[in-house]
Picture 1: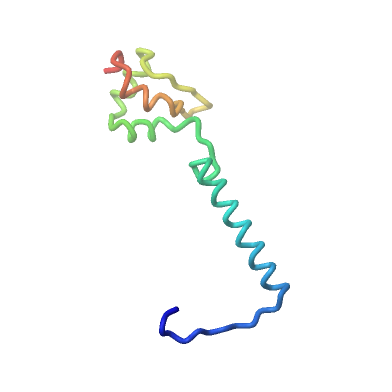
Picture 2: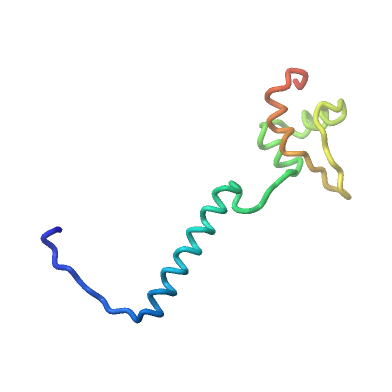
Length: 97
């Protein structure tokens, strides 16, 4: 024990039980979020802008990759989405230049 004085507080048993239960629920929730790795949200597609920022290319280069079918895209109305897996493939596939 340290030389500091100990302080004791009195809490009703019901409140203490609720406190412990809530703490256990929070710990379980945090562990679940850690396992999911993305805050609970699984992202499979990113926008074209996000892809270009991730791989550090401009719109001209992006359009060239799309037009030559070097990267896969999904068009939804007027938006262009890229599967997240294409970011990694951009760096490891030697056919993408």
